[in-house]
Length: 357
Image 1: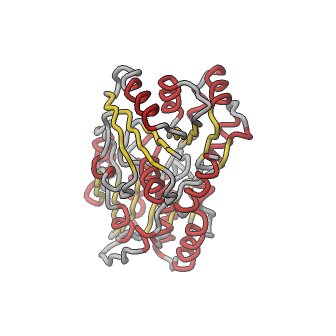
Image 2: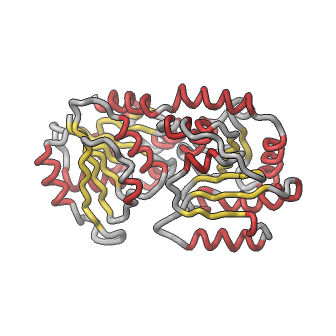
Image 3: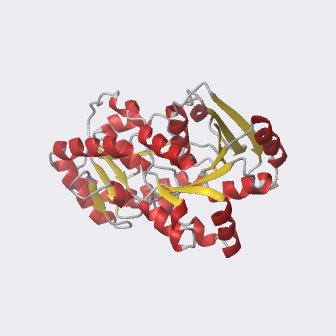
């Protein structure tokens, strides 16, 4: 089977890291794997993490904001030459691009993975009809995403929930890093309107009133908008916590950052899944996430982590203080076990194979 994954950009985000782990974990020797990156926005260091020698990468190099049909001719030739059987699109817009370029053929199947909760509200009825007719299977990364899709007119029978998985060996192989102070880690692309980094900055002010040795590390950049970090630094200055925050920007050593953290906090306002929460559980640190989207499917309050409300810095701070002040060994041990049983990348790959059938 010849399988082509298509993604617009390939920067260091949750969906891109999922693709990397999925490709590396694919162990069917009869399959040929291909990755197509449509835009000229990609992270070379992330690409270098693809270790599977059987993977062929094709770059279409379309400029962001450029001609929408750019690269389609090259894609058509590639799909025809390599006799692609499966076209796995990693967003609705990617499917629209691929379908416009390739059309429908009984010789191949379209698979669509949805990584967020809001996209189907923007599609017309005719677009949804095309999706229902020509997509073989849609995979939703959480029940929240599936419910959003079906509510907007997608056929229930075509939708499977396949949770994102991670390569546990990346995290279990790194020893805990002893350090001074209390390290509060936040991992996620720097998009404050969605990821809520501003709420955590405001919460840090309250945390430091009780724990003056606490500081915060933000791991995650945004290559398409560098102003977001500057905006967060302004808020940190206003809250007088700028000396106790480190902005790492784009981060390729997340397992190392997890190993030196005392808690992972995800202050998101919206989250289709929340891969960083699983990474925190795999790293053996307590996880505090907001009660939104897929995060509340991953984390059960007091069982394998903790929940807090979005946009509530004082409540978030109180929970951070309580977690950092009490023994969390039972919670983190249980969290690791649950994560390993549900979110190992090999399970994701097995379920994806079934979706291709």
